[in-house]
Structures are given as structure tokens and as C-alpha cells.
Image (cartoon, rainbow, N blue to C red):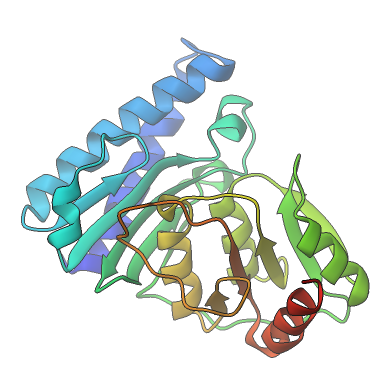
Length: 245
């Protein structure tokens, strides 16, 4: 398999595993989230090491190793992006399988199992984007909407759309359900690597909220802010964020 085919296959299988764990009715709430995280992580990490043993690996649920810092190619995965939503039996959670090459998110797949079996968006199969809505829709956290998103949305006459996981929000832009995902306030590399690879392949703008490139495979995996949006709106969004100071 190519890297993109492998990413998509692993994300899809991990999604099916997570649906099975949830359907077992053995866990609920936080216990369900923990069981799903651990089970999907075990599969993904073993599978990546078996298929791409020379590459580095970074997972939210795996003890980190500095060995990956010397690698050009590093797989960056989030077994359950949106553990809370998964545990609450919601649909807005995701599985991220991304590949950073030279610090850039080059290959990725994001599975959205809660939306249906086989729902996987991938960097090697971009689909055409639809028209931009006259009133831009801003995706924000259900519980902690970013101040920048709220203020830029108001300035652009937009609409706030609360949603769960980072992957679900990023893929909502890819799928045409929104125009802008503007986040600040804390994330890590596994929250955005696969979504950025997929979004960029679909022609979307992807950057930090100051407009600088997003870099991966850093010693410090904290990556607190992110902008994924329609390219036609990127300049205005970045200008308005900069004006906020």
C-alpha cells in the first residue's frame, strides 16, 4: 500500500473497532472513552510499526520517545479525537492517522465513524469544494469557543457552529458544512496533523492563526492554534485576527 492507502485503511479499521467497543455495552461515559482510546491505540501503533518499521511514531495515547526527532518520516495519530464525544455516544468524533515528512503534514486520513461506516476523508482523494456561503460559518468548540473565532465571526457577519472534536470540525470545512475553523487555546500535534494533510490536499488554507506554517515532529508537541478555512477567506480572517492583538 502507498502511505495514503495505509493511512486510510488504518483509520477505517480503527473506526470499526471503536464502533464495536461502543456497541459492546460494556462501558459508558469516561470508561467508554478510556477503553476506546486504549483499544484503538493498540491497533494503530502495532499496525504502523509492522507496516512502516523504519518510520517514527507519535500517538496521543503512547509514551513519547525522542527517537522520532531524528526521523524524516513520522506517523502522528490520535486514536480517538473527541474522546468525550465518543463516550457520550455522539457522532462528532474522529480517528486521525497522519504522516509528517520533513516537519510537514503530507499524508493523512480522518475517519468519521459516527457518521457512517467507511466515512474516511483522505489526502490522496480530494473532492471538489462547493460554493462559499454568503454568511460564513465558523466552527467552534462546544464548551470553549475561541475568543478570536467569536470576534472575527462577528466582524464578518458570520455564524458560530458548535461541534465536538478538532477532526470533526476540520472535516466539516472539507465537506462543505462550514467555511472556517479558527482555533486557539490549546491543541497538540496529533489533533491537527491528519486533518491538515487532508484539508490542504482539498485546497483549503491551513496555517497558525498568525499565518505562519504549521510544523510537526517537534520536541514539544504543544501546538495551540490553528486556522483551516476556504482559501478565498484566509486573508480577511488573518487580517482580522492580527487586528485583535
